[in-house]
Image 1: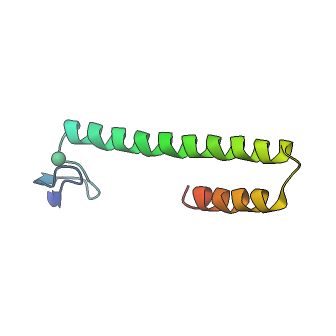
Image 2 (image 1 turned 180 degrees about the vertical axis):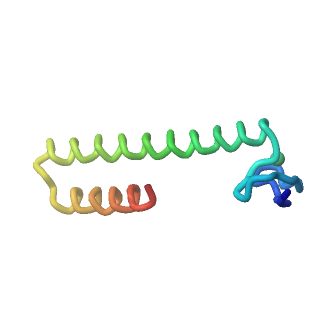
Length: 81
Ligand SMILES: [Zn+2]
């Protein structure tokens, strides 16, 4: 039995036999994949930046205020992984 969906990427209506389809075509699946990759890349860049700042704060005498701020940012950054 076919199910009707709205494509997550282009918004067009399409039918699929599976119950969890989200994209209408290979092109839209590719777009979704690239969008996910961009999110992962941004997340990795933010994590690397936090690590650099933590290392700098530790090298500069372990400023507890700076380290606490970095720890809070890390919790936020990794909360949705
Ligand atoms: Zn589409």
